[in-house]
Structures are given as structure tokens and as C-alpha cells.
Amino acid sequence: MLAIVGLLLGILPLVSGSAKCRCQPSDACWPSEQDWNALNDSIHGHLVRVRPIGHVCHEPFYNRTSCNERVRLQTDSNWRAAQPGALQSFNWENWPQRHESCTIEAKPNSTCEQGRIPWYSAVVHSVDEIQEAVRFAKKRNIRLVIKNTGHDSSGRSGAPYSLQILTNRLNNITFHNNFVASRAPSRVNAPTTTRVPAVTIGAGVMVGELYAAAASRGYIVVAGECTTVGVAGGYLQGGGVSTVLSPMYGLAADHVLELEVVTAQGDLIITNDYQHRDLFWALRGGGGGTYGIVTRATMRAFPDMPSVISTISFTATQADDIFWQTVTQVVELTRSLSVNGNSGQYIIGRLSNSHWFVNWTMFVLNETDSKSVDGKVAPFLSLLNWFGIHYQYRSTEYPKVSTFLAIPKQADIGGVGYLQSSKVVSESFMGSIGGASRLVASLSELSLDPGALVTVNVLGGQVNVNTSGVCTSVHPNWRSSALLVVLMQSFPPTSQAQAAAHEKLTQINTPVLTLIDPGSAGVYFNEADPEQGHFQAAFWGRHYERLRRIKDQWDMDGVFMVRNGVGSEDWDVESLCRRNATVWSSTSNCRADALPS
Ligand SMILES: Cc1cc2nc3c(=O)[nH]c(=O)nc-3n(C[C@H](O)[C@H](O)[C@H](O)COP(=O)(O)OP(=O)(O)OC[C@H]3O[C@@H](n4cnc5c(N)ncnc54)[C@H](O)[C@@H]3O)c2cc1C
Ligand SMILES: *[C@@H]1O[C@H](CO)[C@@H](O)[C@H](O)[C@H]1NC(C)=O
Ligand SMILES: *[C@@H]1O[C@H](CO)[C@@H](O)[C@H](O)[C@H]1NC(C)=O
Ligand SMILES: *[C@@H]1O[C@H](CO)[C@@H](O)[C@H](O)[C@H]1NC(C)=O
Ligand SMILES: *[C@@H]1O[C@H](CO)[C@@H](O)[C@H](O)[C@H]1NC(C)=O
Ligand SMILES: *[C@@H]1O[C@H](CO)[C@@H](O)[C@H](O)[C@H]1NC(C)=O
Ligand SMILES: *[C@@H]1O[C@H](CO)[C@@H](O)[C@H](O)[C@H]1NC(C)=O
Ligand SMILES: *[C@@H]1O[C@H](CO)[C@@H](O)[C@H](O)[C@H]1NC(C)=O
Ligand SMILES: *[C@@H]1O[C@H](CO)[C@@H](O)[C@H](O)[C@H]1NC(C)=O
Image (cartoon, rainbow, N blue to C red):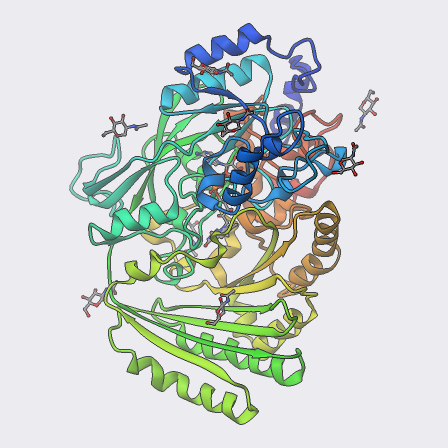
């Protein structure tokens, strides 16, 4: 019975006569100059006609001064975040299928094409401007994209022929000592998610800004590693992992107390445990760019604390048996130390001279004495000595862990090409006999070029517990996790390197990651291969059915759509045209978990 309702929801947009494709610049339905001016007036003159950042390096716009300036600025991740005409990685600014690009370093007489850079941008300064832009896109049937920082490694913050809403300027931060969610019942026995320290952030607030503001008030917040990743946008809507804090406090989505959202109708609503709970659930794990535009997010804040952070790094000229045996010991060491909310991370990668390196970090939280760690690490260091491996070991006492969080990380360099792919590895796999060796056997099968990194983050701990009874829409397998393995592949700015990197990821490395812990699905939506197969099951498992129903309830016309996002099976890869037959109504993939009858 309910399956039939699902079927109807899937095909209704077609029978109700909405156009199959969004309006493109060559179509008669594309807004006229006057139409765009009217939009501009309604958003206080904040509409911009966008060109790719490289356009001043190409005729007929060539300008030596501006071009040189952009050559210099383009590696600045903060600058890229603020530019309507840029993403963080050049590969999603290009549109390889149409051979369109506008490379900054290219010859001035080569043409600059728009690629996946939006045609217009609403550089919004207030929530009402977001509402106007959404209403315009819906009414005029224009592809809408939301760009926060442009970090998404599947290119979800850009799209051809689109109107962009750039949230970068919405950077208010407000702290609360005793936050009470709107319309929370005033009974004494209210859930612990009320009357707690919290912070409300605007859509454009970045990790670095949030950490700095929180630290100055004695707080820490569960947010990401890279200083210029946004918090309220893709990060927390996709789940949100903190390398340092997740084992102690869980995912960022677990600590969201309230979200203010502009819906596909252009309405401004509040979602929390007491209002629009379905949408609130979907927005905490269902992925950015899908359910609405989060304009403000309120997250729980925690007291700052001391920590000891220890690192070991070593290199090897080749990845031989000794190297992988050593890595296996790294895995075991990390498992033995990541208890009581302590976290760890190891990075395996190749240097430009093609040597291998391992960087291991342990985050011992609420600890002041580095000697406590030194003793536990000593046997491993002896092993390295025994193998004749040179290493660097350092333990640093941070009276406040916020000081460490605020240190800019290497990954903040913009402009390089990068792709990611990931796997959530279960505790039952890692806890089984030979788990560590089997993990390392898989890692050794990855094909890593210089510039590729495998980062393994400790999960488990509080990630596997429902904090304060919250129930989020991330893949249920996050709740029985041990590790998040992420492959980060970077490559130089040429179309050949881009094509080769995409192919290697999808053909070789993603299948290797998939086969780690083959019995348990789970891929991180925010750090996924853009070609991820069976994405519904990989990102959300049995939560997909409900996510799709909520999507259809709140955004039947598909105003918000992203690559491999909820509902995207109905659209082509750039979400410009609906497919003839929706996967939703014609295949069994996302129906594996039938609706409750
Ligand atoms: C160098 C680097 C380090 C990273 N480190 C971490 C980490 O430590 N932990 C972790 O969990 N992830 C990490 N990530 C992944 C990160 O979570 C994703 O890149 C995420 O998509 C970034 O979100 P954004 O809003 O900053 O980016 P954008 O690319 O601007 O947006 C991402 C998606 O969210 C949508 N979106 C943006 N703003 C809104 C909004 N207000 N409302 C609705 N939708 C919106 C966009 O349309 C897009 O689909 C990292 C990525 C990189 C490249
Ligand atoms: C929007 O209006 C502002 C202020 O009048 C103007 O500077 C800007 O060029 C306009 N944008 C477009 C796309 O016309
Ligand atoms: C080139 O750009 C610079 C800096 O933006 C500007 O001052 C200058 O007028 C431009 N030159 C031309 C010829 O347009
Ligand atoms: C572009 O300029 C280079 C020299 O800078 C020249 O060799 C090339 O033929 C030119 N290409 C076109 C299409 O004009
Ligand atoms: C940001 O905060 C200022 C000062 O409190 C306020 O005037 C402004 O309206 C806020 N802007 C947004 C977009 O919330
Ligand atoms: C690994 O550690 C070395 C030595 O501390 C450091 O120079 C390098 O930047 C680190 N690399 C990464 C990717 O963290
Ligand atoms: C940290 O340690 C202090 C004192 O040892 C304790 O009171 C506090 O609860 C601990 N904090 C956490 C988050 O465990
Ligand atoms: C988390 O909470 C939800 C709903 O409250 C429940 O269905 C689920 O089983 C819980 N999961 C765990 C691991 O406790
Ligand atoms: C969709 O249908 C149209 C008209 O029947 C056809 O021309 C087109 O090839 C179809 N597209 C796909 C992707 O099946």
C-alpha cells in the first residue's frame, strides 16, 4: 500500500506537467535581462554575473595585472571560498564532458569557458535574500546551487547553467550559556538537549572561525580538521567527523540542537526536536544541498580541556613486507590507545620522491602529562629501532585542546585538484582475529601515486552511542564503526591528470576500499568517490527510503539536487534534466528495505 504511495510520489512531478529540463541560457525560458535585474533589486543589489576566476587570464578579458594577482591568490583557500567564480578544486570548475575549462595558467589566447561555474550568484548578506533567490529559481525553473566554501570533493557546490547562492558572507556567531530550543516544553524533566551551552552559527561560518570564537570563551565544538571547511553546510549535514573529538563526543550532526532553514518554497522555518522533526532528522546526515538551505545552525558546545598530542612519523624507500608489518603495528597501537574517548589518526602516503611515509597521531584528551603517553608508545618505538627504521617522536602537552584545533592544517591549500573516496570500517571487523592484518592487506593493494594519502581516523566511542537520544539520518553503520578510511588523491591542474585521477580512483582504488570489511556497507557522503555505485545503500543503508520520502514531501520539484544526493536518481548527473524513467520507480535498489506496512 505505502509502496504505491512511494511510486506515485516518484512520478507525480512528471504527470503534473513540470518541465523535464531546467531552463538553460539558450532556451526561450531563460530569464531576460529585466528578470535578472528584478531579482537583483529584490536582493539589495547582491546579484553578480559570474565568470570563472581565470577569465582575466584569457582574451578578450586578459589583464596582466589582475591575472598575476589571481595566479598568486588562487592557492588561498579563504579567497577561493569567497569567490562566486571558484570552487576549492579546479577539477569541478571544469566541465570535461563538454571540454570546457578556464585555467588560470593557460595561454591568454586560449578561450575561457564557463564550465561548471554558475552564471549568476546571489552573494547573500541576509536570510530574506536567500528566500528571494530560492523563489526565483523555483519559479523560473533554474538550476540552483548552494556554495558555502566549495570544498565538496564530488563537485556538489557547482553546476553548469546555474544560479548560485553563496553563503560565505553569513558569518555570525552567537554563544548561549543555556540554550533552549524553540518551542521546547518548559517541563523540568526536559531532555538534556536543552539548557546546555551552545553556539549558533551562520551558514558561512568556517571551522577555523568557529574554533577561534569558541576557544576565546573556553569552549570546543565538534567540527572538522581543515580550517576553511564550512560547518553548517555540507559538513554537518553529511554527518561531520572530528578527527580529534568524535570518539569522545560523536559526530557533529549528533550535537545539532536546531536548524533554521529556507525550504524549496522559499519559506523560513525552524527545525528541531519539537518542530518539523522529519526534516530535522533528514538534515542531520541526509547530505547538503538536498533538503533546504540551512541559514543558521545551533550546536552544542563543550568545555575546553587539556590534551596530550603525540606524533610518530617515519619514512620508507619502498613499501615492502617490513613496511606493512610496521603499519599493522601502528593499527594495533592505535586500537590499544583509543579508549575512553581518546582519538587517533594515521596517514600513509607517498612523497614527491616516491618514498613512503607514515604519520601517526594520538589525541589523549583530558590529560596533562605527556609521560603517560610516552610509556605506552615505548614498545612500538623499540620495534622501529629493531627494524632499523628512523622515526621522529614528539609528545606535546596542550593545556587547552582548542589551541591545537586552531592550528591551520596543511590541507588548507586551494587550487590543486583532489578527489576522495572512503569506507566506514566496523568494530566487529577490527575486533575480529586478524582484523588489523586484513585491513593492512587491503591498504597495501591501493595504488598510491605521489600526492595520494590514505587517512585512517578512529571512530567508535561516542560515535557508536546515541548521544542524548538523538537519532540522525547517517548510515546506521556509523553507529557500529571502528574506523573511517579516506583516500585523498591530489593531482596537477591539467585535463589529462584530471582524467587519469578520476579513472584510477573509480577503477582501482574505490573497489579496494569497498572490499575492506566486505560484510558492512558504509561510505562517507562528504568524502566519496563521485562515481560511487549504489550510492543510496552506500551512504544511507536502510535510512534511504525514509530520506527519499521526506525529500519528496519537502521538495517535490527537485529545486535542491546534488550529485548522488537523495532523489538524484531521478536526474541526470548535473541535475539539469529529469531522466525518462526514475530509478525510484523502476529498480529495486533503493527499495531493498521496504516501507513498514
Ligand atoms: C581538505 C579537506 C578536509 C576535510 N576535513 C574533513 C573533516 O575533518 N571532517 C569531515 O567530516 N569532513 C571533512 N571534509 C569533507 C567536508 O565535510 C566536505 O567537503 C563538505 O562538503 C564541506 O562542506 P562545505 O559547506 O564547506 O562545502 P561546499 O562545497 O560549499 O558545500 C558542500 C555541499 O553542501 C551544500 N551546502 C553548502 N551550504 C549549505 C547550506 N547552508 N544549506 C544546505 N546545503 C548547503 C552544497 O550545495 C554542497 O552540496 C574535508 C574536505 C576537505 C577537502
Ligand atoms: C546588481 O545591482 C548592483 C547594485 O545596483 C550592481 O552593482 C550589479 O552590477 C547588479 N548585478 C547585475 C548582475 O546586474
Ligand atoms: C586591469 O586590472 C587592474 C586591477 O584590477 C585595473 O586597475 C586596470 O584598470 C585593468 N586594466 C585594464 C586595461 O582594464
Ligand atoms: C596563441 O599564442 C601562441 C604564442 O603565444 C601561438 O603559438 C598560438 O598559435 C596561438 N594560438 C592561437 C589559437 O591563436
Ligand atoms: C548578524 O549579527 C548582527 C549583530 O547581532 C545582526 O545585526 C545581523 O542581523 C546578523 N545577521 C544575520 C544574517 O543573522
Ligand atoms: C607528516 O609528518 C612530517 C614530519 O612531521 C611532516 O613534515 C608532514 O607535513 C606530515 N605530512 C602530512 C600529510 O601530515
Ligand atoms: C576531565 O577531567 C576532569 C578532572 O579530572 C573531570 O572533572 C572532567 O569531567 C573530565 N572531562 C571529561 C570530558 O571527561
Ligand atoms: C539510537 O536511537 C534510536 C532511536 O532513539 C534507536 O532506534 C537505535 O536503536 C539507537 N541505536 C543505538 C546503537 O543505540
Ligand atoms: C528519453 O525519451 C526521449 C523521447 O522519447 C528520447 O529521445 C531520449 O533518448 C530518452 N532519454 C533517455 C536518457 O533515455
